[in-house]
Length: 305
Length: 322
Image 1: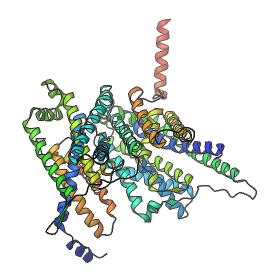
Image 2 (image 1 turned 180 degrees about the vertical axis):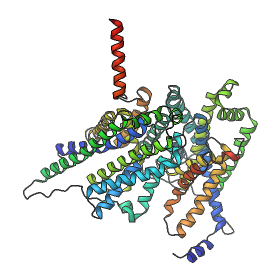
Image 3 (image 1 turned 135 degrees about the vertical axis):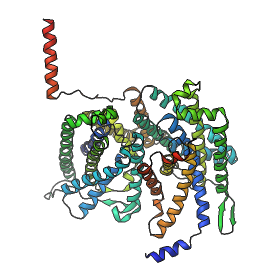
Image 4 (image 1 turned 30 degrees about the vertical axis):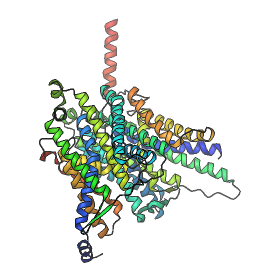
């Protein structure tokens, strides 16, 4: 395909729609990744089972909304709570004792992968591996040349509320201060009378709960099966690495950068004749470039986090 | 299915996965590199073998090329992460496995995409007329066993010698204390990259052996569960002990097949495949809790100078006693 044709293709793309899609993707990645980056920063290892928290939340939400027939907000709240509690139990009974026994980072990562397999295949055993779909029909709005699906606007609103309230919590409240203190210097935080263990439990609870919310959104947008969370593990880790591990503000920026990179990248991929399946490769490239150029990620832009 | 054929099949699988497990032992057990993308190098080896053998290249060259390309892949993949903490390497290797599977799935020109690609056996024997099918299968399996276990023995001996050499001492030093090793003038990135290349090459060769044995590969054979299975083998058997890797591979394969056979005799309320992976997960967490050094510990071995020191010490103490 000649360059002229490619340029022609790109001219015909609805860029406003692309921007909107990027915001939607970025919002999803933000809600999904924020728990991972905070627990990673506090506990010192990446929890690979985080993807399974998305899946678990999606299935609990599906069960509440479709099988029991409760309204969707109830599904979100119940999924948030149950997934959060399961995550706390996992931390309390697997990772914390292992860390106390002096397990290395690699051991903790292996344990998290093992936990991921346990959750994933338990879900497969309970709900089967056939993909399912939410039956909720969302209204769709056309504004000018842009199409907005109802679930997208909800997703963006949730992400914005989350970003803003997290900011307020981190800056204004005692718990927020304690979280920031524990992640920047756990020993000093402990010496200043902060219960670091409890702070870690709180972040595992809230992080997994938010992952569950992201999982429901992902399932509403696409399909629900035991790999719902694993399907987007690459962009989620890209958000964590690009944003700087444990850095909340970095994660916000990174989520929207990756959302944009993916959606713009897909346009370029199709215009040069490559499969759109490669959108996940964009996240991978971002991880690799970040590690080569600036392993701290965007964290250096946000001193405060 | 004939029981003898079935057992031979298990033995061949044990051989192939032993090779992957000892390569993980080299990386993780001896050098402290957490490679969570073992399946990526296995995949590179398998597809290289498949493509080259279709082009008519003899099997030993296919295997060697698979190893070399996997080694180059290992170098490229590990370079961004080797200077950093071990969790970065874990993230990069884990994601690269996903990306490579995505590529072979999408690009149907590489290996048939989702439809897979058929592979020729390394050594095919032309039987004279009158051979029963079962005898043919058994003899073919025997040839495979000789080939695979020959390569396994070769890798085993080479790695055993390597880890007992001064080079192996640097590997273990890097695992135990990176900073101290670097302060003695050993570049950690260089040694880690070399070990990573060697481990990837061995995994690539195992991938080639796997492809030629099962004679058909598709992207769905290279799911992350393969990496995880190899980790179980290594951790159960003993990460810093090559005999342990063989033991681990044997135990995990037998457990794997055992549950497959059991499902024909016992009806369970849940799907046995799911149950098996749940059990794998539980097993690994139990091992990490109660025996993180694996069944077989790292063996103490003595180099010649050390032996002299020990002998002198022994004679000194016996002199003192008398």
